[in-house]
Length: 181
Length: 150
Image (cartoon, rainbow over all chains, first blue to last red; front, side, top):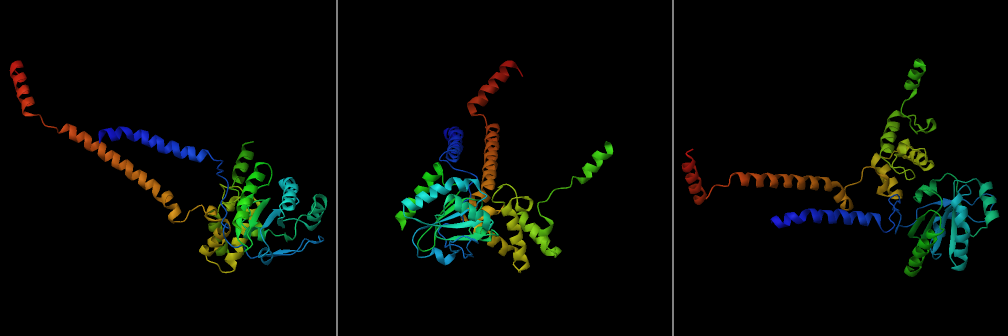
């Protein structure tokens, strides 16, 4: 019994140390918010197209039975969106992926000019002028990209731009989603 | 100068992010909205309640809370609405469920362990104090006493 007590500080240090190691390693980001939507059906929403842009609007029905789809939340006022745009465009072309856009709190003129300048890879774009659809999607900031299954289930939520290491992590999630289809 | 400082002190009331155009006409509903939004975490600036956050999303959420209250939702229904979109993360007061048992019970478990440790330590001490002398020790003590004539 006495000998067991001598081991107690060592065991305690091991537990606390192990927990700290777990917390510090593995690229865990304490500020990342786990999405409440994962494995859930996509929220009910219906958005008009951007005024003056020739791409149809986006609603819940457009994300069902159309194969794996990326939903990219973007805005012309968002810098990182500009950075990820060519990467997402290339990804959708090379991997034959359907990509749709959710234009978050933007003006039609700015959004149209932005798409004119950088190209429009989106099959559909919903104009979320008020940001309400964004809240239904649990969006915390722009850009954000969701991977939606053929049945309209949210498979993955990727906050932040799909660039650099983010691109690698996004591709991993995408490959997992493709394998699951 | 002194007067200026005094005036500035009076002006330094706590700053709220709730903007005048958000405030509801019904003071009871407004009060409920304030209570709810004080307990909802802003998803952008994460250690601030939406009640005092200037982030765009926080403002949207404040407006939505007020809309739902006007539409007749209870406080619980408003919280459910937010949790459905942003998860338990938006609550400053985490719910009682299997994944949070450790969080809620942890402090009490640690307190109980500390209490146990104190009890064990005290018991050990008392045990030492009350240990009686063996007959041999008693005899030796007597012999020593006799020798020194105490």
